[in-house]
Image (cartoon, rainbow, N blue to C red; front, side, top):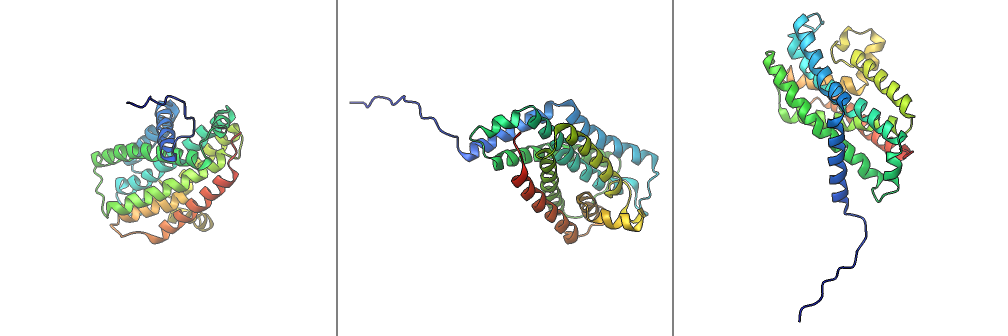
Length: 256
């Protein structure tokens, strides 16, 4: 005799893996639907690469403009997605009460942060593919090992995500918007993206060397332009920013 089916509801939280997968998917969809995000993550980096390669006015310390620019623009793309776009979007989500609703759900704070970070990684894969294709079209000739490049990009992503979430989780949305754009412009100018750190005044060069943008730019340039091995110093700077920023974000992030 067959046993009757048990149709009683069994409410409960989903597994941590399912929650992470669902959160990552929705974060990625929302990012790709925002026109300003596409402008920040794709149009501006590609535009800067095309413009400064064409005009050839940058002091590139003897290197070809495209060989100098592509690694820096890759670092800028990571920063624009993981830091600026992440901070602004999350700040307004908190302002609109979206994060408060997440806080009332079974979704842990750590999985919210992890889902946002994984969505950023997915967007960056698109950015890297586009920028590399544009670089090759402009005559770029990369060197070095791709695994070192991937490692630098991954650690830089974690570092910038931590900084973006730290800002978005502590400041008001309007303040986050202003601060994120201001920091983006500042790091573009003094982070070794389009101007070598050696061309900056001594004190500003010392400050720039401690910034995550400079570590990412110089590390990628050492591998892709000079064909060097893993730039340990730059990697350690990025690791320090990644650990510190994520630890602070996890402790201070406010849902509302």
